[in-house]
Image (tube, rainbow, N blue to C red; front, side):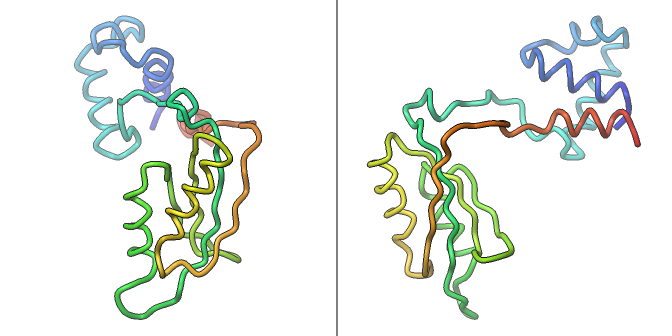
Length: 158
């Protein structure tokens, strides 16, 4: 990434519905340059999507929790991938990561209320490969998920 890529990402982050022609006008570069840069950023996986960012709270799920799961250590037909497949079928599971430390998987979930959170946790635990779970409820989001500051730092160089 270079400085132009950084400016392009900033522009589309601030105004995701801007067209390529308008972006080229604002950046002072040719339309083909903007299109080529966008194609390159998408092809290399830097830009992973153009869809809208959604708010679970606005969708009626204001409670966020983080589950640390310990899974049964099996050598046949189980493990992380099978549990991940189970988790992917639960709409309230927003993401799951294999981790180091006390647990095996870290899972971010949302729920309609604290009472509904119990239903979500029960659904997550409805897999015999999960041995134990611990849950932490998020009280507030201090720094939301973001990548733009990292992209800016990369574009600005060392």
